[in-house]
Image (cartoon, one colour):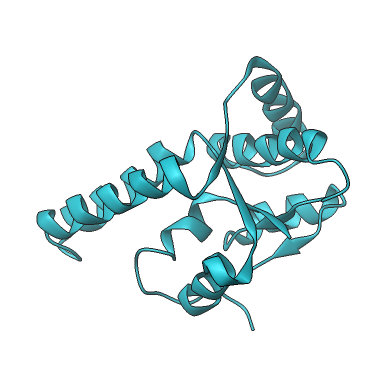
Length: 149
């Protein structure tokens, strides 16, 4: 199965929080799933780790180690969707239709780009962001919130 992971889902693979176990099971190689991410995720994930470092939730060494692991996975495990002008255009349209942040609109637009090239394997949209999941559902997308049972 094909899954598109937004940054709120990706972070759960590296930092233990609600939904981590479900994300680890989804991402396990033996599960055989393909995982896609928008290239923008590297900025969002770095921001999440550094923010936790700045507020004292993790040390700098741990943040560096997690970022290195994430970078390795970007290069070897995740299928990356490049940010394109058409994704930017669609994100603008999504902002007009839904109550989203700019990054969330880009994530949702990235999903549509992945879906357009996925053939018959329609990806599920994985996020822990309620507003983003609501927008995705409104757009007719199959969603998965790893934070809920």
